Amino acid sequence: MYPRSKPYDQGMLAVGDGNLVHWEVSGNPAGKPAVVVHGGPGSGAGPGWRRFFDPEAYRLILFDQRGCGRSTPDAADPDTDLSVNTTDHLLADMELLREHLGVDRWQLFGGSWGTTLGLAYAVRHPDRVTEVIMSGIATTRRHEVDWITRGVRRYFPEEWERFRDGVPEKDRDGDLADAYARLLADPDPAVRDRAARDWCRWEDTHVRVSADHEPDPRYEDDRFRMRFARLVTHYWRHAAWLPDDELITGVERLGHVPGVLVHGRVDLSTPLQSAWDLSRAWPGCELVVVEGTGHSNGGLGEPLVAATDRFAR
Image (cartoon, rainbow, N blue to C red; front, side):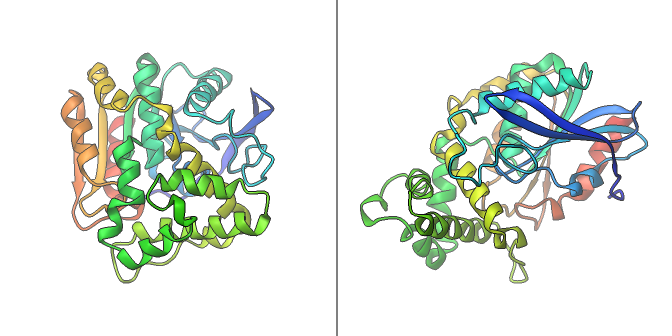
């Protein structure tokens, strides 16, 4: 992986509804445009994303999606309106950013939730995309949300019962993302804080595939924890506002767009099936399965860098 390059330009873009989206550009100003679509929802675009790109070859654009990272208003604040934070809003923000930066076509790069958002952008704006490189593939279909909030309990039964018991007893057999979203909107700050802690503890559990797993230190930050939990539950309870098979059927139209999907064989959070489904439906797609790796860019770096290097040439 490449050393982290420093941004040479950055700013805040007004995208409507009182939202300002933070963006930054690094690498070569005359290089090939690429945009990173970060995960979460709510993780923000950290500097580590720059390490997947040759700074001499790429003009790399990072942006924080509405409500997270350095974008404002912050979803960690209970008064921040999430009704204007939907997949359609984020897709419109990406188009505004592309136009603002004078980019005609760009490469899409992302992971996890960023796969859902990135593929939704590619399906709706195929003529604006040069290539798609994604990892930890997720399409946020209803059955995927059900898996990550219920099905994966077969690997972590004790931790899952604690997660389930974090909601009122009457809600434990229903939609857990929806139940947690209601707790995170409770007027009592103590209820909101406990719900955020319980949600993020579960998030840190189901990405674990080895005994030496180290907890994500970001969850120790009160504001990150609340921001992340609010946005994830908000998107998951609505299945990202996407028709269930929009992405699977939509990628059939991307035959002219090269794609590389990189996925860990033992990814418990987002099992390989969704990546396989996409690769079968997308004529120009290559699926790279990495043995012994879970839902983490840490074990997926080599094939991701190989893909960005190949398309840079």
